[in-house]
Length: 256
Ligand code: OOG
Ligand code: MG
Image (cartoon, rainbow, N blue to C red; front, side, top):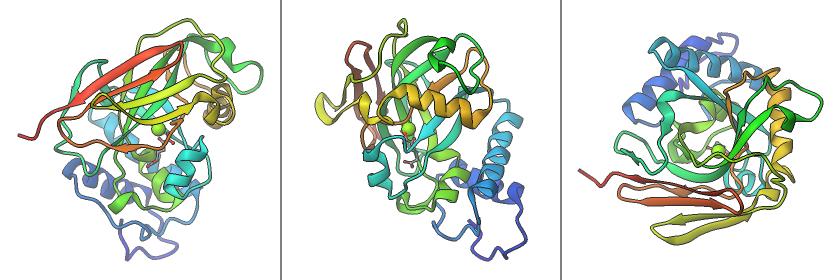
């Protein structure tokens, strides 16, 4: 972002514009120079950034959590829960293809998705609002050089959100300790357990309720990756399997 930004001249719309154009042109920004002072400012930028997508006709479809597992926190050197928004433009159909040529340095990670059947509010049993659960994949693409950023910067950047794939929905059951496998071109790349997600993915859902205030029926909630993310070059076949929930897959287009 603008490394010459002066303290006190916080302009969320301008910072959102810089991040948006980095994403749209596939050109990374240097991390560490945003001038953002705290996550309060960062979420204001995120809102302005998502607002630009809405102004282009996109629709919000989901709420995502980040850094809910130690594997992710260690990989990125960040130790605080963050949240971002998903839009309809980011959805890739299960079994579909993604053109990564316009992305900066995409990575993919295995996730668990919740589909809300009722309004999710803080307090009570968050699972009561859940209609279905599914294995999912998230594509992340930090708009910062080398995936290196401060906590406020990754928040401003809508938590690196770039794409998501939802597997088959099933009736909610206990998600406490299910094996997670991420395969790249048919070979295991990462393995883990849903227990890596805050001890239990239902805690991610409770956190989503707390952080969002309320989430509408029909919203998809991504609980955060259970394992580290892996690079996603062109011509890659990706599959994630969550024991008991089944699999979800997509491929990236070959280089033109
Ligand atoms: C931020 C996104 C984190 C997760 O599942 O932990 C995230 C990043 O790693 O660049 O989506
Ligand atoms: Mg994620």
